[in-house]
Length: 410
Image (cartoon, rainbow, N blue to C red; front, top):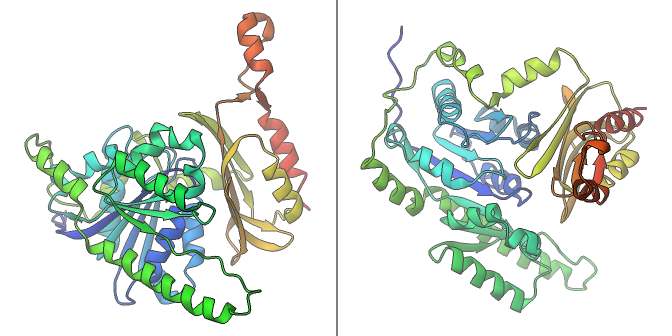
């Protein structure tokens, strides 16, 4: 057996934010600034079982050299930090031992409470291996405008545990609303550094559009520079937590085993599913679909063979007609070619991508007013109050959804 590999002070950055805040965009901006001669690693925690973000990020890296120097690993099937430290330890250990990165980025699921992850990364066995830099949190101005987000504890939790707050999608906010947003942030976290993301909108019809283009580029360059600087700023949030953790030491992992197999034997006992295991399970029988409830949300996902081609317009219309959808992501073979789909209530984004090995689609629905008809008991067994509540709910029949989606295949 080889001696354990000891890693020390590898710069590590958490990129957090509520579901649909725009974390993937910020991570892409960070990856775009990576020096060609550096090796970076990205750990993505997906709430659903089907990995989408890894495919989206990998497909966005156009330069072949960049692809070779960015290792992306996904942990799907639940929050990496909710149940135990084991899934997180395994995922990070594999990335470090297999790819020897010079920098690590971690994107937890948007439905996670970042405090749990911060507590884990403050444990003694990471205090020498990882140099924790500023926790970068992404906040959507569009989401903040809606009271169901502002008052949501999970939405607020990301602000409370941020060193740096990137505010995007704020162009519709007027001056008084921006001030109200800053005051709301300050009440939750008076120490956080606020960075307003550069706006991507331009007015090409303006006679001075060329001047605006130059001005916008200067703003974008300044924002990119400020964002990249945060990669080397120490995290006061994690530093303070680590001081607390030192007083309560736990069993530490002395080194990281270089043999992947020694870690792989432990993985099935965890509640999270690695991308390798998930793909093996799904590839055995495509098309594949799952649906489940987690926290206040319903999740559903599909993986389809690459030769299934879906009508692009009908697919978009079908997705947008789903009730109470909170997030829709996918890489899908359509009549318009291979498309990346990234929808949240404030932004609908599609773009063409290179061909993929299969189509992947995942949706997250707000559970509050949704009932899964596959799990509904007979009405005669329910009280009048329960029946009245269900009468006002939206019924979801996932078998019908399967048939509707398959009907879009051309």
